[in-house]
Structure formats: C-alpha cells, structure tokens
Image (cartoon, rainbow, N blue to C red):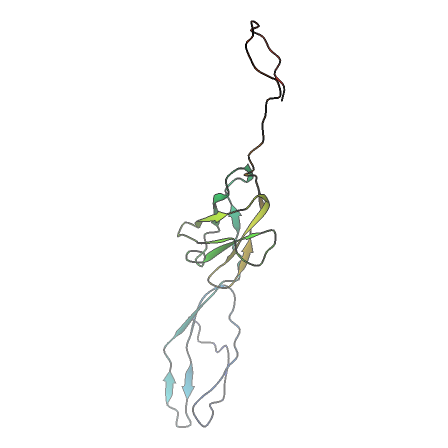
Length: 171
C-alpha cells in the first residue's frame, strides 16, 4: 500500500473530521486515517476497504422469443461475470415499462432465470441488472408474441351417405 496521503482534514473541537478523497481507479482501496496530535503522538485507524467498480455489467437474454400460445414463460440469461454480478438482481421490463414483469438473482456463474406471465399480444422484454456497485446494464430486447385465442374452424360442406370416395371439403 501507499503511504502518500490522498486527503487531509482538520479535526474539530468535538473530535470529528471530514475529508473528501478521490480513489485512483477501479479495484480495492484500503483507507487508513492517521492523526498526529500537537504532542507528536500518532494514532492510526483500522482500515476501511472500498472496492471501486465502474464497469457496466453486460446483460443478455438467452431465451429465444417468437410466437407462442403459452402465457407463462421462463426467461433466462447471463450477466458478465465480474465480482459484483453474483447476488445482484436482474429485472425484466416489458415495452419500456417502469414496473418489472419479473426478477431473478444472478448466480455465481452469471446466469439467471425468471418466470413471467405475459398476456396476449406483443411483448418486448428487456433485462436490466444493477450490480452491487450500482452500475446499470441492459440487454437487447427479445420479442414474444403471445396468442392464446383458439382459431375457429368449421366445415361448410354437408356430410351424409355417399357412394363417392373423393370429396371436396370446404370451410
């Protein structure tokens, strides 16, 4: 570690102090406060560790969209495997909405799975992950078109007794 000060502060009469510091880049930073009183005594704090991560997570939906007659869908994907992804929450949003359609916890390997219910119609699903450092990553949309309406089918040709094996059937 470095012994170069990254900030200074004046200790107030009540013993409190405040220092604004800028940590140099991504990674782990162990911060120690050192105070030297007027008599020359040096006090050192216990270290406080900050892990800076400014890398936006890469988020992907791996489930294939498309036309379906199933309203209940299991949607899966991956989040980039950085140290802050596991344990973070992926939220699924439909058509740019602000209320999640579903959520999932990112596993150690970056995978996630959410079960959602989609109504009839077209759904453009986007997965958004906010990693534990607060970085926000978003997937490309995957479109599901749900149609649970059963088609109406009727035969218009009249049936009955016949001596013919070949028939033209219309509907």
